[in-house]
Length: 179
Image 1: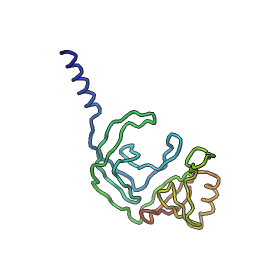
Image 2: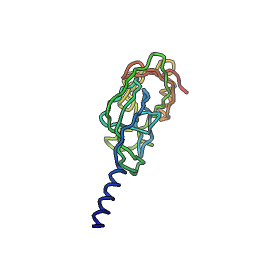
Image 3: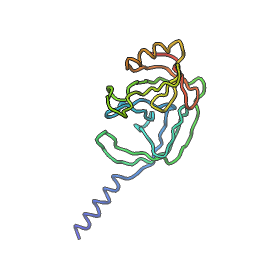
Image 4: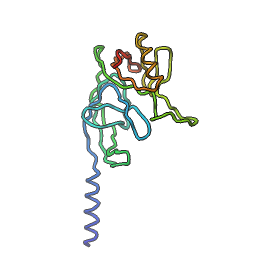
């Protein structure tokens, strides 16, 4: 009987340790570039939780969000991940106004160096035209003519670019200033 009681208590405590809880997460209207294990990726930007992805959530650039999400403990995993998040509901979604600016880094390399293998996408910037690029297959970046030469020199030399940006639409941002 003691063994049965021990097993019951053990599994009850284990269940409580992995219990789910609902939390409120605030998201900024832009994503950030994260240096992940062997590559770089765009992740969600939250001031109150370290969250990179939320299952069931579609992010629109240019909108502030308040979300209720279910936090599930799954780690720690080898990459440091401890929690997985599932969308419960969108509490609010508010588009930014024309006066909103933000800072962001653009890294032209997906990996930490160029990988010479077939079917490897080494670069994060795809040219749409002379002054517009698609970054990480996620967002279009418009570069004004007066700073395009400097932007191109840095990215052609595989150097990161940090700048001030403005939203044009949910699919496009404009580089306003290089730092």
